[in-house]
Length: 368
Image 1: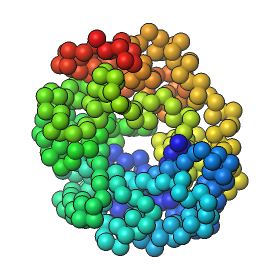
Image 2: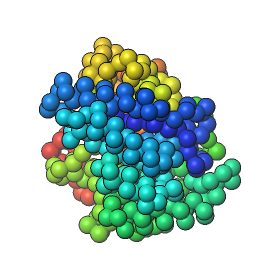
Image 3: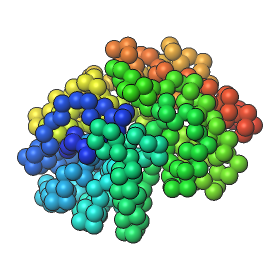
């Protein structure tokens, strides 16, 4: 099922230290004309492929700055442009929640959004408002937004971004975050073209940070719920139901694309924000055409290249797939290299996961 990273605005009310968007010249918000073109293209694609569905993942910037009326207009345009296919259009959203009110909740529900992805950092001055990153005011509004979601029966999941400032506090952060939610993802900070505010970390630092958290998660994993990447690694080792996030799945070339505020097409948010991929514009390019282009085939051939090259004989291939293709493109200018974060996967699994669990991975379904 194709996932379209849908960025109707790049504006944001926050000033998070590790954000790429706050450092770029922002495009104007998506016009109603372009929004209509998006839904027309979605309808064209789904009409041509009656077995398919599409997820539009609203991303930013901060999506809620668009306002409730904009979101309601999107729901109306979907009904108008996709009369026979709208049931196969799904919406998700990533928001900092600090602007959430009941009117916006109702507008999200009208789009069929029942679960919200968000980010949070209890450490001071990493996520916040203004030049000084007022995290106290930010966190109060964030928690108010969480409460409003729960009052309306909506789910939410949390992303925590590990920065240099996080490294001394793996246990404290683990307990703080898992007491807030049972759906948690722990990602390394991604720094492109510089080390913003000295926040960058090495793959080894990330592996060791995860390892200290894993020591706490593993003995009480039923209590703490789904914590990624621990849960997905455990799923692969135990051959139970498991899925991999896009950076480790090895298949984003099949099912990911990006639409920006002016209708510009790229592969994903990183590809667009870092200026790495240009697929044209939604005004003159269909979704099926993007997925069918020859240069798109390079993404699909990447796995074969890596298995003969950088990832040859790696026993963690099924779990990692060479990592995010954007890292290879940003550093090497091509897709034929693994990401530097592969080392964090190897180190975490060999230093922590396997010794603690007593499992050894030899390929999908072959944990000994």
